[in-house]
Image (tube, rainbow, N blue to C red; front, side):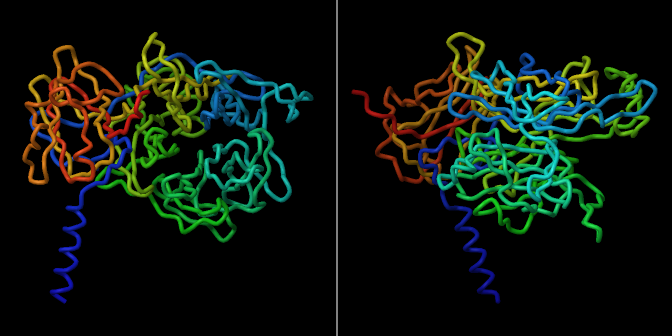
Length: 515
């Protein structure tokens, strides 16, 4: 027994000591995977996207103030958007009317991800006309009974995906309880891939989603649940906390046993949407932008928030409609189950103004896309989209936010300095490139160390040419030399010394030989 335990401990120690094999993939500091030690004043820092203009307003008669649950992705030269259209009418004397028109799935598109249009598709009739952008309405499709208000759409990058299901969607089933799998050849005309739900264990009253994971080569689904269960009548009976559940599938139809996401030592949170997807610049990283839901109760601060009369009127229908508030969080995973979730807000409500600080505000669209910067000559940036003006008037809006590429989290040190030492690693590229930003007086130096932490000849800190500036892709040099071919496959560590600088990402690359 003792020898078996010793063998297990030795095996665990060997596993922990095994070097990371980075190959040529881009690595971000969204978790602690690369970090062995932070010294001096160095720390990891979560960054927040900056609000930009309204991307689209949901003000058509078939849309309204309850529109949301957006799916957004880049499809070649086209950006596609799918969303729930719904009108929530607040009676000033108290109460909320949710039945002015059915819930629909609508479609919008863009050439730049910044300016959006609603094409007239002619697919679904509304009030005697097909002159609208509706792609899905309530009603049976065969035996399937989809709820168009709860849909998540993606383009399937699985090489084996059939042409008739190149675009896929997960849609809540009204009855029976569960999630339906839908497919489309063009992203506009949809049909069930199976007429009965493919996932049945969950609450599903949120944006439930699925996608192809190119690293794991399988489909992943993520959906909302309560710590409750299904009654004998087949209805979900909620109890306890709102959480996120996951499962995987080889074919999008047969899913394995659901598991609840794990967040390490992060405190419990009430989470609505999850917005998880592989990050397109580093697909081995699954990034999520869940919505944090809080009921903070009535207080002078709650009454000081915007639109008090609307808040009080909603509260007459349900107290939480008036005093609940929402915001966006950030989390990251490498296996799809264990996530590092940051407790600080990634998408906070921001400065108080009409249409903000309410239940439904800052729900992030699924998911981020690359767009041009507003600064001439600047590189592309990331665009996020979040809801505003939920419950307010006759429309809701989707605001775009921007963030630098890979700019979710940085290792930062102030001018007094700090350092980062990585875990032992191996790499496959012949040069090291950094995504970083410094002040004019700031700097980064990089040292390559052997397994014992001793500087490698020619690549010590004193040999490194100082880096300063603000670049998504800067090559590190030591006495003017960038070539690391002689160190490919060897086990080593990286030591970064920073002063008033942020380090966002690193990558060992093999640039093509120029003619």
